Length: 135
Image 1 (cartoon, rainbow, N blue to C red):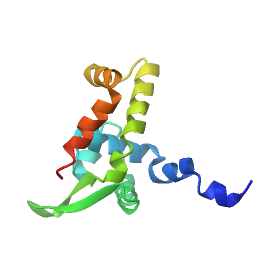
Image 2: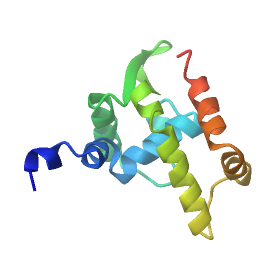
Image 3: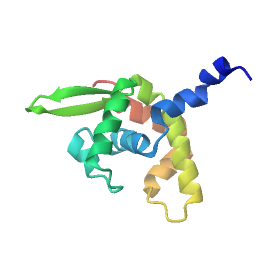
Image 4: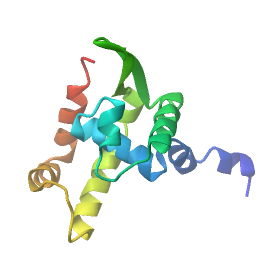
């Protein structure tokens, strides 16, 4: 098999950008949980360590998935926002939510969210995307 083709595999590219647990959970918290600041991500129930969080935020920013801006009220604090590149992952992330909710009998996904996704996945994605259109 041609290694040039393997190096350009779209699955490999996607995994290089969001193929680890912490990157996806940061995006989840950003897209669905409204989290914008380092301390908000650090407080997530999964318990990400500070060194991993800092590393993943840098990786997501370097990969063009998130943007980082100084927070106006505190110049030493930053606000993190998803880019269009991250928002383009919404259909995939929504599919992951549906799959996890369907197969995990102890899912923590809010029933109203899973119901909204089941009813209209594209509409749900559009609503989430719309939240970030003015930022």
